[in-house]
Image (cartoon, rainbow over all chains, first blue to last red; front, side, top):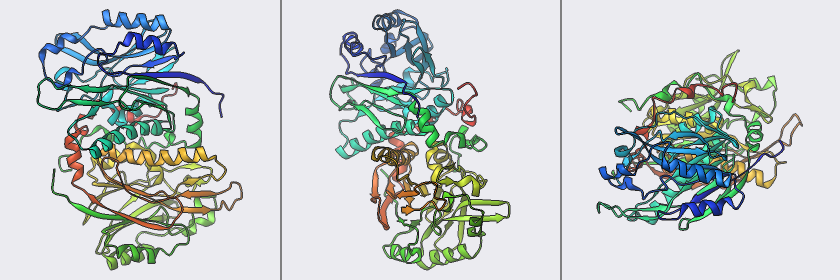
Length: 292
Length: 292
């Protein structure tokens, strides 16, 4: 057993309209070193509709929005994980996480690699597939493997971040229920979401922070009953064990002392990563074959 | 929503010494179409020690052991998933699952691809890495993606079986606690084991059957306190939802009516498999880089 290497990490579960600047200040006052915000925290979840006007919400990186968050990271001396609607140019927009270091510098970006498209989540209308790959972002507190929302359903993403040296996995996310679904279906969806992210922790022996929004947001097209973002943000350790969790219906800050050295302790007890059959994984680069 | 396509499936959670032939007969009498046995069910878990004498336990395929199980599968008209210690020749032994169809024919084999090696689980001493790849086995009741024990920690294995057309994932397994571990550690390990396999169901939208042994088995070397195989076998559906589960300490048969058509229903609600970034997964064929 190694001597503990504690990272004090937290997340801000917010609903649209919360004053995020005040919430960041209050969270930082708790002594947190790393703070994670939900996906696209500066806006309503505009992807519920396909509206060309929404492209106006996008920001350049760097730009006034990153200056704002850079300033907050520096002011509070925290590593801050933001989720922005990035405008690269008139033809290229991304769903981009930006990590600011404690000195306000931009430590790195991650452009969401897996983009969903379906009722209430028309993200392919807005976002180009990420083009920066699965590369963890080096900060003063460690290498952060930032992934975003839909990425959470892909074990490949968590694994690639791990192989590239991530010390923690972080998921800003915006996911919720269709209000018309049955309670049983809602529970299955929430459980599936929690379980698969805890499984990324387990499969890779890394802590995971998953930060969701909460609250109801209307579908302004009127085509659906909107989304009840389900909150339930959590922090777990490298065996998938829950360290902190919220309930579904509050704006809240939760935090935990994560021992980054437990990763290698766990890897020595159940050392499965060295047994990966990299001679036999070629077909992971394939879709379903046509006859499957 | 498709019309249900029900598969009545079960598993036999056994401890070493149980009369498996009688247990199979009793299970088949419940009308099950598919029956799964635990890993290496015909023997004590001999991999706790490195003893050359144990190679005598191995059997050829086909051979008298497969004839025995072929006969039982035909007699009870079930698809039967067995787990055998296979002798290919004097230099090649495998941990091999064999699937028998309802007519007693051998539908196919899977040789365990990921082989563990560590205290109480010296499998690399006995088993060569599997060399048949991740190929589901076609039976009269569907394509079965059989994986074995240690494979369960590798999302790659479940994904490859899925991409190759598996309709259900099946894990014969033999995993347990070190008796000297704390209760907290035992709970974390059991939870991790359950969660990661439920996550394979979720990530791939496939039902999962995981069949473990239970009961204490001594480490005959005297070097450790042996293994308390933890049972807790379960069957879950394509959202990871538990359909049947045992507790840790009994020889038992559990079963469930699995609707194989729910897989495609679920895939239409959250269609993430088409969004896999197969242009960006090359590094899954890599180990950790030297500087990670």
